[in-house]
Length: 332
Image (cartoon, rainbow, N blue to C red):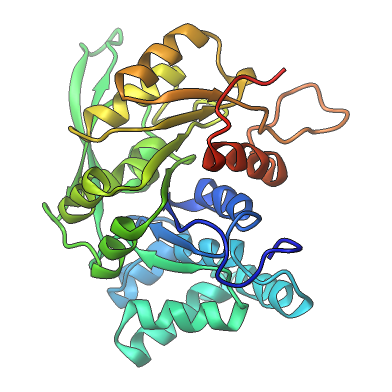
């Protein structure tokens, strides 16, 4: 917890996403509040998570583990257990590349029979400054309609791609994404948290596979539309190779709102170095009901000419503080 931040203080914030993008948001938000609920996508089908999902029939634990690690208590105890959870086994055996935290979460789920209770226990072990919840009570699959450009040997065509890893690495243009099973159930704790929040933060992260899935769970989508909370969309710093190659910041906003009819945004937060056409992004934000807020949130890599694709937790925390406090004007 940030110095001077008392237990139970700060606004109630729900952060939706998955993977490294959600972890970046949580690392920033923990400086502003300890009333944080991370709502995590459960569609991962690659790596350690995918193996455990396939072998044990459980929800993929990896993104949930990363969110818990991002909220760990800023003490020797919290940081030590964070590092243990994030540790991956090496070698060529059956444990190779499994994260310790994934195995711990899987064990707790089997022993307790309840995904949320298991995550809450890991949160207690870490002294987590907030709560981590799966967005649905069942594991999900992502399916996408992908437009593939014409080649010398084949005409342009629309393909159906299934699986988070396959969608994230597609070479075509993602036009629409869906969840399987259709109309999956949301965890009631998630719906309750969204309806009781002061702010909801969407992004950054893999746009079609980590950010948008939250808008495709009917009860969660309804809560996001109907909540009295204000909604902030945090844009990525770069287009990801694969699912969002060549997609402008304005197109990111429009792709999201196209999958979430009736969702109103209040703020779109972007780093000016990641926006070539500020006017186009401002128009897209206005169409979504939002104010565009530009702040420097990119991590600086000393001595390296290429811009970093990572958010700096402290810069992002400062930007989010401005957003949460309503200081939305331009800065010099």
